[in-house]
Image: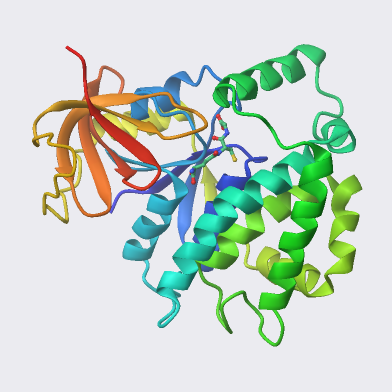
Length: 311
Ligand SMILES: N[C@@H](CCC(=O)N[C@@H](CS)C(=O)NCC(=O)O)C(=O)O
């Protein structure tokens, strides 16, 4: 199998989720740093438009969204499982809550003025302005939670997590599951990037000890890789044969159609290509780019919209 190449940047919480999953599964991987804001020319050459962080590349296959990336890593390295027997459904549901409700409240809390001052300490004013403008555009008009709403919400969520950790080391039992990796990454940002705000954990010592256990998992074995090298890897490779070919048509769009896939909120940059698979859980597009040759770009169904491309 080709190398696992993670396109990410150090301060991305969703990337931290995947870095720790790579650590949990003790995988070796290549690390490509991408810009935090648009433009991201090398990344979008691979994805065809999708710009969120992180993206996993394996040869000429490009996997978007951490829910899908977790499934791909589980397939490659089934043990230790992200979905321990008996808690698979719970793990996915808790992860979805954590990646949405918990992440939203935690990041709104983290980006109150004291957190912003730490995150951007030493950064040039233009960089800060570019970041704010980029994320405002990504929200496409959706309001951000105020610290007055975010703080008590985050506190409640931390108490829920503390309750789940009563008498067990991880959220759903004795072993870590997808739920832990999803719940950890927004808290990691508070702890590591905005430590001035980390006093919020003092009321929930169970959460603090669990965070120490999560951190100890580590990040596997990363090796440096340049973006240009990653593009060359895609160019030299042929996309892997599709594992599941079962076509599930929910849109009245035939395989072979030219389509557009985009996230259903926050960061709607679309990817256009030929729909070559639409299984129960994912879509695959075939597309070509001078820098990458032909690649397969994969998306989960949940959280994404599929439409026919307008000719
Ligand atoms: N549902 C996505 C969310 C990813 C996400 O929102 N990532 C943030 C960074 S933590 C992002 O893309 N921010 C804008 C950017 O990096 O360009 C996933 O699970 O991968």
